[in-house]
Image (tube, rainbow, N blue to C red; front, side, top):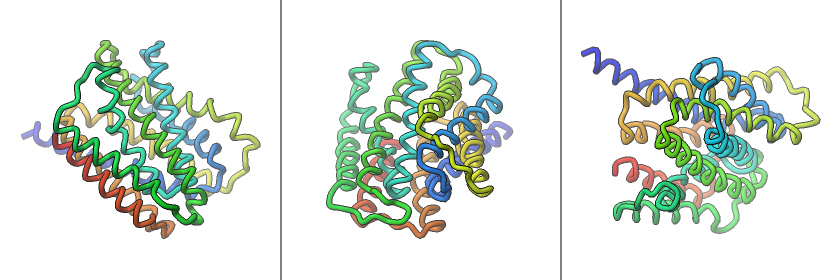
Length: 283
């Protein structure tokens, strides 16, 4: 009985993780800091939160961790920049195409072969992603340069794929606490890398500082803490399905807060990508 309760609690923790992750788009857009300033401050605050919340994140730093952390740092930065230029839906769904690159590159980098059932997933992910680049999307107040944002979101998907493959590589190498170490070091690297572009730093309103603190402490730091606690108790398939709440809720929060509605082709592409992710999670 207690084991079942523990399992149910892990499910709730992972759902809470997805919920926190999904608020990122709306909150990033609500903050009046410039894109690089949001990225820098969010990452540095997140680094402090992760190092405090997760003691194991302070151990096991080496050259392997540095490589994976660099990919994670790129993802943190690209996600914020994409959200500042395109819609939250576009940013999160383009980042969610990471399995496309994982499936294509795993045979070469991890010696993991592609299964026949993965071919349909690959086709759906590629087709869904292509719809974001068909035609021109009108700029919005919250998405002033959709073309640039879509490109950055695509790059975020690629960098997240390298992060995922890197974490698998660390696990195969016998690295302990590799995920937590990569998150802590990666957040530091992300903050330092864009620091020169964040100046001159705007004073910011109290609301801006509350929002940026939320992003670092809760949307990244606490979310990752919950993630590390929930994952050992859940199967990969169940975790993947629960985490799909993030791309589902992210555009809803952006719509509720900013009245942001993606273009029809982007919505179609997002649905196709969501179906592909669902098929991949259940395979």
